[in-house]
Structures are given as C-alpha cells and as structure tokens.
Length: 94
Image (cartoon, rainbow, N blue to C red):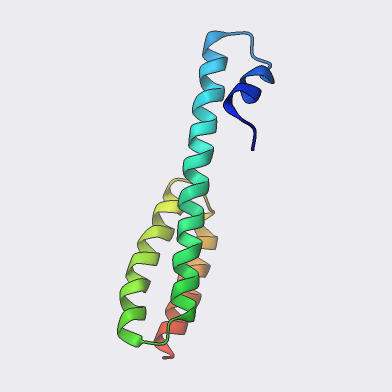
C-alpha cells in the first residue's frame, strides 16, 4: 500500500472538492475492506465450529454482519442471502 505522501503526489484532481472526494473514498475503501474481512473471518470460524450452541450464536452474529454488508452495498444482497442460506443449512445439519 502506498504511503499517504505518495498517495497525495499521485492525485490528478484540480478542485478542492475532488481532493476531498479522493480522501473520503480512500477512508471508505479501507473501512469497507476491514468490515468485509472481519465478516469472512467470522464465517470461517462458523464453518470450522463443531459445537452446535456455539455455532448458533455465531450464526446470529454472522447473519447480522452479512445483512449490514449487503445494506451498505459492500456485497450484493443475493450473495449475502446465498451465504446465509448455506451457513444456516450447515448449522441445522449439526
């Protein structure tokens, strides 16, 4: 990843508002990346879990995380639905 100084040198904006948009887009990109990665980590925990009660608790948490990602358009709503469906089936089969 580029350092902040390098990032500022490589910008091609001519207006103050465009410079601000570049900064805010970068901040949003990093936030979205963090939320997406955290959700994937919890999904991985859920898939490797063997305890049913623990899995049910994790499922509630992961479902809420996926819904939030879909609401913010970080992932598509159908992808969120497919992931939730698969995880629910896995927990129900335990």
